[in-house]
Image (cartoon, rainbow, N blue to C red; front, side, top):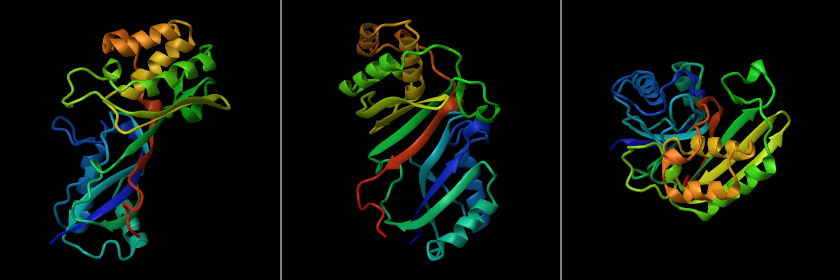
Length: 254
């Protein structure tokens, strides 16, 4: 009987075509991770991630589970974390490992996820590829007023990439707020689930509100119309980070 394990990892998504394995490219985080673990453990390893970040999107906290014939990987977590990282590229890092119940599922057992989007208002070479540089006057109060409205809706079709294979576009947003951090503007959004391109489309539409291109009433109409063509532009992937994934209290025993 194989042992199921959970790992917590982080990655810089700049070089990758997202998390999920794809037929048309080997450059995904999942494929690199699967190959590295398979080589190290001398068995076929297939990971299941807690989500599906898109091309160029980063993850400060990400969970995945996999099964292994080896039953001692969690007996010395520090040693195995070091071994995992020794066979992974520098832009992917495993930070923890522990044994889990056989039915544990990193994707479907997650109850909430939090993303941050970073806008840099001052040209900064150290934020290149890490934030969206935007030279524009933005009304932060208006952007927060519009963002707060998101918690009153459930259907986010207006902010979803078209022709996806999900059964529903319903999401429950429990936090949506902008804050200033020096020269940075950071948007934090928490929900039970997210649609493809959802956060980037929301941010682009909120930016248009901050620029005075749309009113609060316009924003309400955009959400209500459930039509992606009515919403704003999608901001670049480089500024988007998955920062937290939550499970029920006590889910990770020990």
